[in-house]
Length: 145
Image 1: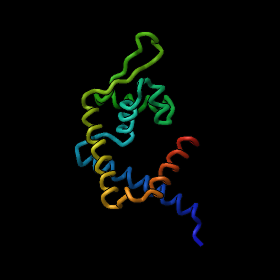
Image 2: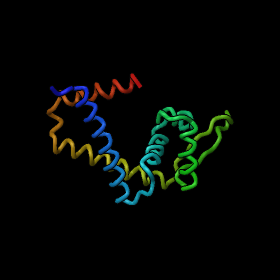
Image 3: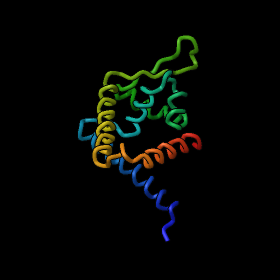
Image 4: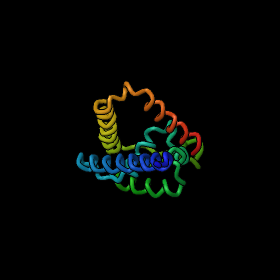
């Protein structure tokens, strides 16, 4: 008998790995010379209301040390600038340079195409059970982790 927990685990891991692999390949073909980790750091900076090192690290669920390593590379590559908050010099804020916005435009286009393809190929609009299940899975991970 098939163990549903095992199947769900395998499916989640497989989908996650496939998306990352395809995403990386497509971005490289489109001229992006950054790792997926670096692209996701740029995305987290853009999507943070106040892009402090702490807020971005929290959004990415990584330590400040891990984020510092990625940001150092992105600063050297001229994708990110770092500066201190004028009112609280302890806070380090991050700012995306114009090259980062070009990468994010390509990254966003990939995601738009991927989702559009899913809706076209799988007719997801009619599959309310699948959509509700994906919402539940997403909410579970947000609450749990």
